[in-house]
Length: 124
Image (cartoon, rainbow, N blue to C red; front, side, top):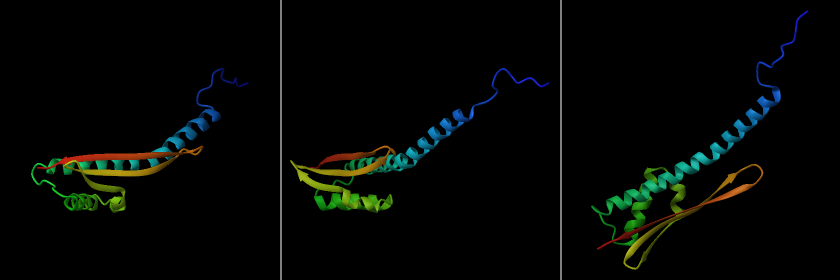
């Protein structure tokens, strides 16, 4: 007669289900969060590029700054962000402000992620 093993030699069905549900949830969140993180890093890069070129090709008015931002958004294929930034002249400096919201769906609730980034350019 065959004897049943006294110890289990693998994961149980319930353990496998819990593991795959957790893995699926992590993938679901990653699919939503990674594009938002890439978008945020791209905007950081655009602002950094404008700040670095300020030394060699200074922005002296609002229209020049707006044109530079729009050109960089087009280069990065982020044309949908054109309405998400403002350019203003304040206290002898030009301020470029990106402000946009994204939603992260956590299944049990929706979390609003607010992104605000500002660059202040002083010119001579």
